[in-house]
Image 1 (tube, rainbow, N blue to C red):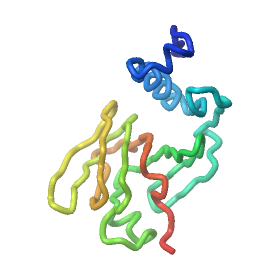
Image 2: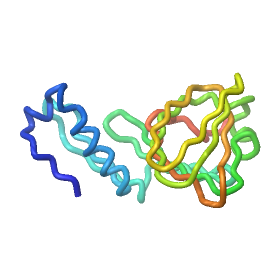
Image 3: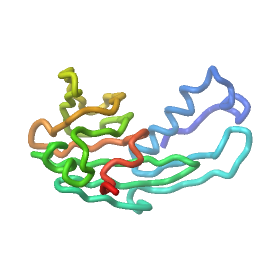
Image 4: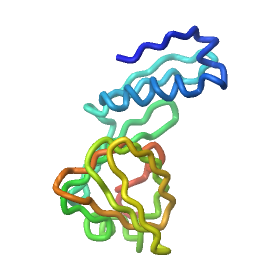
Amino acid sequence: MLQAKHTPSEARSPSNKGIITQIFNSHCLLGSVYCGGNLKGGNMQKKSFNTPDETRTPSKTKVEVVEIADRTLLRTTFDPGWKWSVDVKPTVATDSCEVHHIICALSGRINVRMDDGTEMEVGPGDVADIPPGHNAWVVGDEPAVGIDLGGGSYGKPAG
């Protein structure tokens, strides 16, 4: 477990933002999310992706939703052969994915193609900002697993 070697006042310092990010990311990778409200003193909270608040399961997809500190975080798992336009599009009823994602990829690989044709591949350790207006698919034989910090509505049925 990562232990901070800084006092609460040091952690509040804008120059130590990276420390807070390291602590947050280490717990996401372990399946738990810790959040201390705001750094001015709030109550600490802990939730786990292993017991999510909600689970969404479009075809070849598992989205585990945790709501904490006014934020919605997702752990997404896309099975080999998954493609947004085939497996999620029928559920959400849009031409392309209209969710803005900020993803930390944990395992597996996905390829993302924007509506303008721009493409990128995302794999373990990558952090990606993916604007609305894209399609995506799993590359290879391994499920693609990631933490999505921006896509709270992802995989919800249209309506």
